[in-house]
Image (cartoon, rainbow, N blue to C red; front, side, top):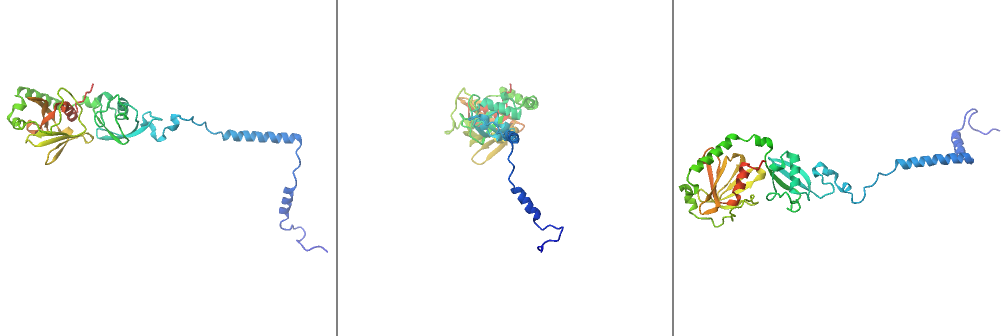
Length: 309
């Protein structure tokens, strides 16, 4: 008697799967010598190809500066790969430039960097950080720190060629007129201030010397009313601050038409100085007992008369 199952011509479910399982369980036939050698050769080629595609890039040798330099340094590093860098804010013509620069570079190299940023030739630059930056000293030696503000004063060739001739002519005329007059310190309006004598807290003077502006305000001086006055040069703002006990006047450098000065008779190591704030001499703001070593630096800073060539 036939067993009950699927109708004739139909396969029971799972028969194909069982057949496939049986087929996979059949032991593989041993390879002959020729087949074994061919299979081994193919495996060796595949292994070599895999090793070639996974070959690591050559490692940088230890101590290689290129490996140590930060990618973020970019062109701002000034060629300082592998050297210690500081972040600087270079301020020129009221514009700020953020750069990274090697701490062991000299002031001369910094001028070249400034030239590449601003187009201002090194010979026309006055670079200041707590005073004038020496060209032969490194930033590390003058104790420049990260985030320091580097002030730059100077004019491009085009600016020099476009000098305001009427202003220069007015200054020359004023000088010629001064030469015809009696010494300023003998005039009555000035004698009443000078006769008070030298202020007790006047800053020391160095006769026959020329120095850059100090990093602190110039103080211990009198104004025309005999009151104490101090001068603060805010280079980053291009302003001169004239401070008294009552108030502080903040003057843009460009608004000052002229600066005149004269040694004080009997005290030639000090000057009396005037800042012309308007079109005539009536606008002079007088300051007395200015140390002689700072006179040229004051004029250069206010009028922008830097050494161009």
